Length: 221
Ligand SMILES: C[S@@+](CC[C@H](N)C(=O)[O-])C[C@H]1O[C@@H](n2cnc3c(N)ncnc32)[C@H](O)[C@@H]1O
Image 1 (cartoon, rainbow, N blue to C red):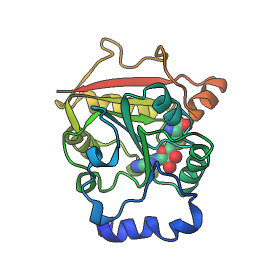
Image 2 (image 1 turned 60 degrees about the vertical axis):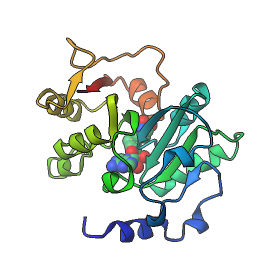
Image 3 (image 1 turned 180 degrees about the vertical axis):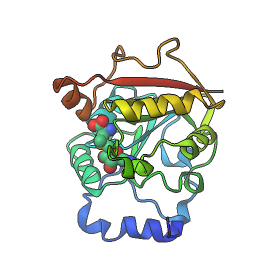
Image 4 (image 1 turned 120 degrees about the vertical axis):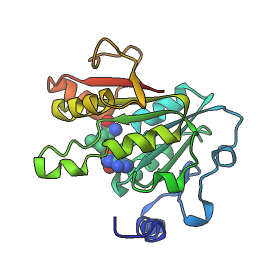
């Protein structure tokens, strides 16, 4: 991370008007609206706020938001093509007042978002960076755990799902060795099925290919 937050956002937003279809649920973040004030951004009285990192093609996040109109969902993805795909889906829907998406990654979360604000944080099938020399690019690490802990409310929950066995066990070990969270699936380390779950695009693919899915659920302590 060699740029400042302002450079980072400028880079992300560069030429966005050329690439993004307008949608009221899309928030282009600039330094002048930081830290994000979700009470103002969502035009409703919902009290529960959930945050998805890396929503991909947006299918499951849109379904979640439509099925739970009394919960606010804030989703981020750092890739432009994922934002475009999700925006084109949002433009085929009626406005979803409890959903806001943005394009950015996890690099500056504490500078962008007030602490103690999320009831739940969700990560579905984050890029596993399978080669050893790329493991350092994995989003979930010790530093991320501390950021996660700060951004969650008391009793906040972190949900993580992945088909990648080695990354999943790395995450299991990280949480096991941390005093910041407890495992809500104890005595299991993970579950391979979770009832009433809305499957993501990756989840469907990976299940079809026969992979075991690792679902984890942790409570902030
Ligand atoms: C393998 S895809 C999974 C997409 C979706 N969650 C699913 O399960 O179908 C991983 C997604 O996370 C996004 N992503 C990875 N790391 C991220 C980060 N640190 N911050 C924001 N988005 C991230 C990628 O751009 C990509 O869209």
